[in-house]
Image (cartoon, rainbow, N blue to C red; front, side, top):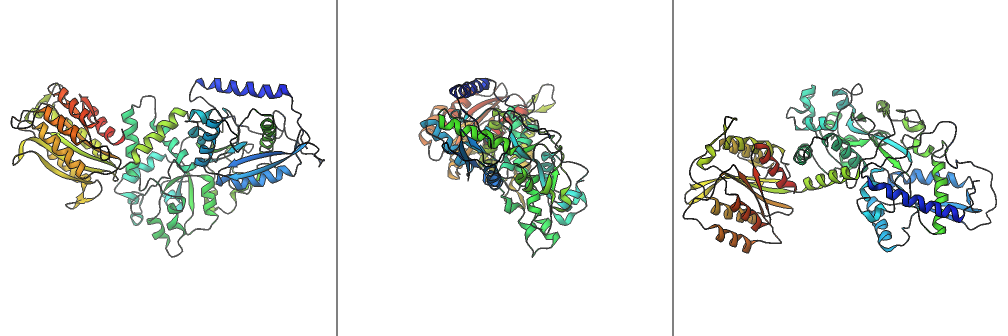
Length: 603
């Protein structure tokens, strides 16, 4: 039995410590997890000692623990073992109630508590991945309820879950892969033929939603860490994320969908492999799947980033009332118990690695029944800095923005001035624009819609524009090829000549987009290096008045204008963009053009 007498001094000390922790948050993103690595000599602070049963003369203490469903069973098992040691606080016996709740539910509960000042309905939160704590901390009210520093009670390395034959084909278990390597493979038309297995078809990579899946979230942060270098610009980050998503077979694959072909007894191994999908996962999830004896087992392939892991955190929610402090004392006792061999056995048995085991060693029963994939995934160190709040926010915002079905109509000026040579580069304005357009179009997702117009003057009868490729799904078939390839070919075929029919073209493009409007993002990207010189067209004032009058809040279409070169009518392009709620940009290089095109899908 462990008994702890509480005093007013202890209560005040807890309050001071909590206030100090929040003052320490002034340096965003430098929160480091307290990782307790145990040897055989016991625990720090109070420690935990089990003693014989004793009568409970004081008021009982109920410890309310909320856990994600993936860890709730192990926590429940350990809570029962903890209660059998007869823990007490102020001579009152401690009981532990474990409830499974989703991250969204926990976030809503904490937000209500923070806004109302009421009890949050939980004393301890145990998420499957401690990264979720940072996700919820994006709300300042919730952040004030969560501890800055907390222990890790179990962890599992982030891996690429691949069917074993495919993993062996890419060099497993002798080499790791990077998640962005898988993205490159997914974009390779040769597919598995590059590894001597054309019968497997294309390399298919799926991703669990990082808003719902711990593996999807930790995998995203692993990938984002590689993209988010000190020298990376916002445009490069956007482009990197867009290229990743464009290569994926699906953005919201579920665990069951990812492995469906591997568990169908009616399929041969060859059929199962052809329809299989590689996903970011954890070693623990791979082990759990392989215990079901599938047709084809999975391999937990290291992703090559040192120490990437989903870490089960133990987060006590410190309160100010005496009852809450008594519960927190019980929470500290339960925490210490979970960090003993007796207290983390259930996690080890469920496939988690636990602190105190040698680095890189799955402990105990975790290796039972998992076949060849029991080969160990190295984790050099547990002492990892948690992703910063800024990194998590940027990663989730980028991912969410790119999940949208963007619809973009490219409208390119091909008037005679686009023939002008750019000093020192030896290429014309149009040739440089073509380079940027081609680069950006290759990054557009198949889930987006895309179209291409060119404009000059009287290109199609009385029209100042010509439809090169009609607006439609980027991945749809068009004249025996995909719309993406048709747009790429159309860009290459653009030739400059004639005057500039800017105003009539702009109005026609906006009306075309509105007639084919889709939810999310509908944008006209208009690139011009000159000014309207069609004497028979409407004036700028008339165009702006019409665009303003036809502007719809229910079916918005924005115009992103790109003033390309010194002769572009920047004032007119700015007025056009403003009338539609869009934005105007000045481009002096192909990189500037590409940045605007990527922004059209993500801003």
